[in-house]
Length: 198
Image 1 (tube, one colour):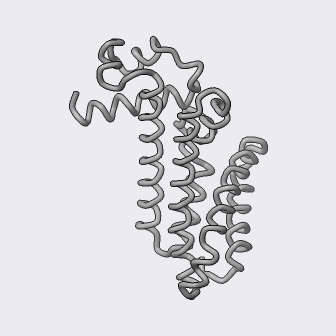
Image 2 (cartoon, one colour):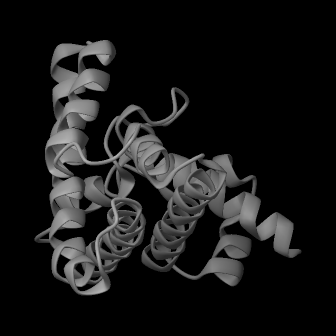
């Protein structure tokens, strides 16, 4: 298989696993979604667990790239972080699940598949680290010094990641995206003490 074909196959498997969950996804469904025979899937990707790990890594890389692209294209660090948060909460209408694939993996497999859960948790920390990088840019935009940024950035990034998860739950509960958008803005202003220009 070419690199493009491999990436396309992993993307199709990721959509299936993300939507159905690990346990409810059968090899027959994977064969159909990936348009590959069982032997070809095993030869190219290994067993079901190995394929699942590859889909998690695919999701992790895509998420990080989207965050980085969003920040790079923003007019300010504040706007970049705000858009990153909005994208994480509102997501893509075509996404197979309202839950983040990584969070869904942890919730489903916490007691059954420690290797997969460990990778998902590590990937969530990678997401937090990227949030920390963006947070550092916002703090620098506020005029804070390096020592102050070092002291605050990781804690703020952890709070942001937790709020993203909470607001996704609220969006699912209330079905009021306009309200959630206002809450995102208020959250950012409170978190950064209203000291940046939006």
